[in-house]
Length: 328
Image 1: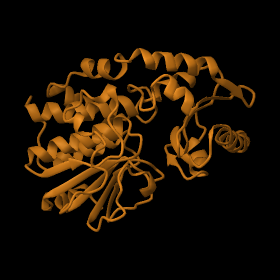
Image 2 (image 1 turned 180 degrees about the vertical axis):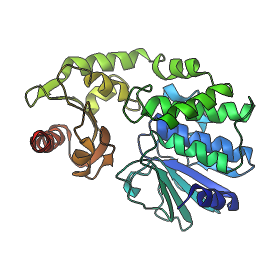
Image 3 (image 1 turned 90 degrees about the vertical axis):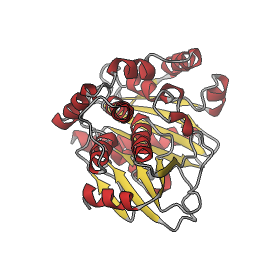
């Protein structure tokens, strides 16, 4: 399936819902809002479908406040739903159980299950935002001048690049990543403002949670794995149930000699785990063992009905077996 065919299907549709994976990060949110702004510019009846709400550090994105969790399933007469940055159907932040229309799946995860009627998965893209940027061009929106719409869309796309590449330091960065960033800055995207909103905009409660996480992190498997668990009680204590915790796990991975970082967050449904690796260890294999997925160096999983201590042991046992094979 080509982007041209995906674009044709979108242009033929009138009412279009846009969704992404549960607990959306900067790539998921930026991709969705870039497409939403683009489709509104093309006079499409486009809207966000989401069980989640936007994080405070991403509310600056154009139309970001529309991600408020009120529309959880496709509205009546929706021609098309576009799912972005989501590798499998179970992790879509929308109730699509009664939806009978077309579903487009656009993603960059190796583990993508090709669940759409139309699928476009580019595993060489550093972020789904890179793909959406090219898709929006296919839809006929140009990025040649400093127009209002190019800056709005560009701000969303640049956010996907910054967040999914670790501010351009991860190995997924390519020539295309920098080319797109260059094009966006050329049309007036304020990269400094984006960085400040994402990374220099933390609430005090988030800093307190980070302090708790760092103080309670523990090393396992001869110091190769670092783990921290955030119980429901702790998340409520710090009023951080909806806070993005990706920066916590990024700091955990910076510890000397650590190869794998694991952040566990307990919810009423079970335990979410975020996994990151520093070198070549494949955390995607660990996540997939429990029904999750993602990238080699960054993956996630939800263990439903499994709570903090058991979830931690499950993950550690799987990491231990994978580390043995990795070393061999």
